Image 1: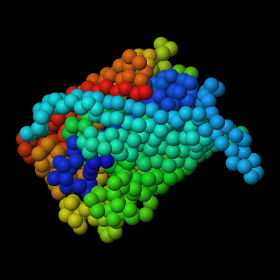
Image 2: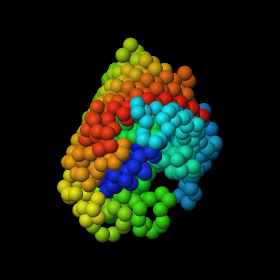
Image 3: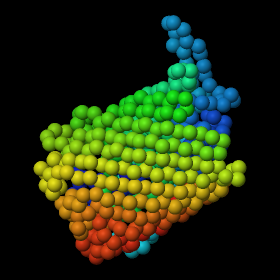
Image 4: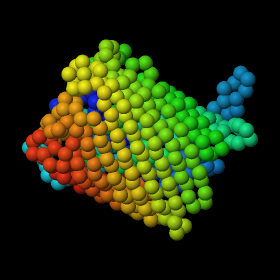
Length: 452
């Protein structure tokens, strides 16, 4: 999942961004408790974790409840006055241990370069069937920066099936804490590429609100449906739920405080053949928020996006994948303007990401990705500051990612990844006003994950 702190945008001035920029996102994986429940290897639901194949998308759509005939459970029939029981005999628990090494092309001023973390993360998962219609993917992660466990991506859902116009209709309810985490495809932000990310590497300051800033900081409830295994619809309403913040919410020290409810929508169409699966869709979100307060002036954000995903099987076991998404954000930052955090009210932000992957069986994967961000310049919103600021107030950033992943076993992942920047926070040279070039932030990242 993408960090709620590391890439904060519109309401955060540059000095605050500097304090938060080292905090990193946690990225979830396929978990062994699903394999134990279904009797399938990880490759039964994934091209490579966390990328879902059609079987994995169906498993998620149906609330993570499918199980093998050999999965032991405790089952009693219900009646008019008797509640039934349908439990797995053992808790669906899993653990992930992650260690990593990060090296920048040029170190940050007065900072160590070549950082090794053991662990980078330790995650606990409650993932699997709760009943015959309710299941979860629930992650709690140890944060090495704060030295404590905290809630991570959470997706709890109910699902059922019926017929509509003679075609299958799956419908359900969903609770989650990260917009797009409930999505079935890997072209939307929560489960999109890159699959691994560093705790230390600088990242661009500007990012749409739907792409990480609200992750694990909101609570959402909604409904979804899939008709004829083709047409997917999801509508969810979100409100702020600040983990670690006081209740009721005062909003102090939190950059996003949703006023009322923030609607999220998703519409997608998929087509499946024996060798090719493709999806094309749209999604978006509207948020009214007050920075650092639960009352007072509001910032207004409207994000709308288009995405596509194509997976084609080659040579029986290899898969070529393409994913892309474009997000347009229109915002009116009246609250930030009144607090001196922005120089103007109206802003727009455009982000485009695309990646192509080649999977050699389920053991090797090579990925190349390109990303580009542009938007309205604002020298207050994007102020000069060492490493994380912008000399010209522009949010423009662009670059590429090269990733190689190796699974000697399906629950052990070894990944070298290189991120290169052609532009960072508005420039290629002296972008921050302190003589740092975009290429100074180029990052070599080595990551090892073990799940059991």
